[in-house]
Length: 106
Image (tube, helix red, strand yellow):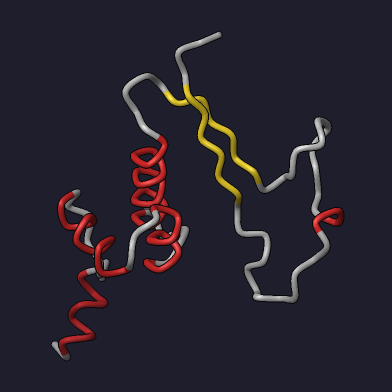
């Protein structure tokens, strides 16, 4: 048995807010695990909560999820997650210089 703990995260299988599909209809891998389930062995010293937070921050930072989605993954309110982003120096508004000039009417 290793010293690693496991993190399980169920992915969003319903991005368009369609009515839920019966669980048996979800795609599964060869071991019968739902295809949208992420299983990660965490190194010693990294808690499940910290791993979820770091994953949420990175997904938000690269634009893969919205602020609300990232906050939900991390288990925080949007406001609290915004404060956490500040501590990690991740901008909440990521305007390019051109977009910022346009926004400011320059």
